[in-house]
Amino acid sequence: MSALEQDIAKILITREQLQTRIADLGQAISRDYAGKDVLLVCILKGGVLFLTDLMRAVAIPHAIDFMAISSYGGTLTESSGVVRILMDLNSNIESRNVLIVEDIVDTGRTLQYITENLRTRNPASLKICALLNKPSRREVNVTLDYVGFDIPNEFVVGYGLDYNEHYRNLPFVGVLKPDLYARPNQSGTDTV
Ligand code: 5GP
Image (cartoon, rainbow, N blue to C red):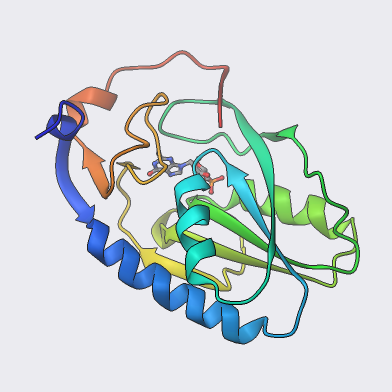
């Protein structure tokens, strides 16, 4: 067991479960967007492992782009909902079919901000593909068009998701041992 794995209380979603579900999502996306110009917009940094596996599961031609968002003024385990764009898209999305690829939806505030922002750029369509969803935490209404897994209200790491920039490289999604993140954290931190 690696040093990182020793910090995990339990594995919630295994590497195999991730790959099986992502293959299904890729098939659904390939079917729904067949014959269309689709742009996958990955929200950095957490969505990056999901994007690269999803791309390999999507059998139709597609383009990719990236956006980095900071959740400002929250803690390391709670996003504040006050969001700003750290890095914007390179592409012009007007009249294109945009599919946002996000790691996890918690309160929904980050995605609400992103979708409102992208809608002003007049894409032909705007949909969301989220790997993980915590329905019990939702504060605002966002429609998720593709969801990998609904998960309980627990802080998860791995497969792109971090705690203080660590654990992103774990090949599974797991719950951190509570004593590792129960410590109070300074406010005003930017998390990406
Ligand atoms: P929301 O705006 O929906 O409350 O939060 C979305 C963002 O908060 C995600 O993109 C992610 O960066 C972060 N987040 C929410 N829940 C978790 C979690 O359980 N683990 C990690 N690592 N990040 C989370």
